[in-house]
Image (tube, rainbow, N blue to C red; front, side):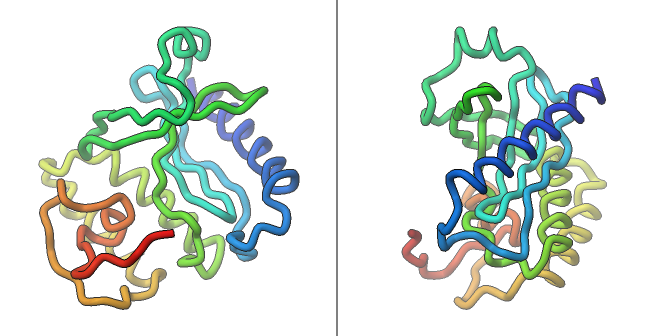
Length: 190
């Protein structure tokens, strides 16, 4: 099974390096300090779960292990599905790339200008993967949360607006990775 995860990581990295060259060339949302990298993609239920980092996004990704079976019952490309992960319900969007197959993606950061360098982005990607696989009721989750916040706060800039604490179910994906806070007054998102 580990070999399958390595193959999926390798295939995703090759695919998204190609997309970077062929489809993203000259697009102003690319962070020139980042390169394509995939993390995790170990089996989780009927999928391989991991994080994909590119110069234009960081996504939590589920890749169906049985592409044929998934294709016969899959929602349409672009449709949203709710997946129960140990950390809670997460909304994914169904995608498909010729030569690769189906995947489900949940945007963590897009664009990725928050990251000054590859090391900072990779630390965040790895921490995000640990976080979504951690049940918040688990006592050890509190220690993981503290470690995650320490990594994140050392690498990401402070928010520009006043923050207020909310419950975990009220927190967006981006705010989830920033420590469970949301902006007091929402900014317009592009």
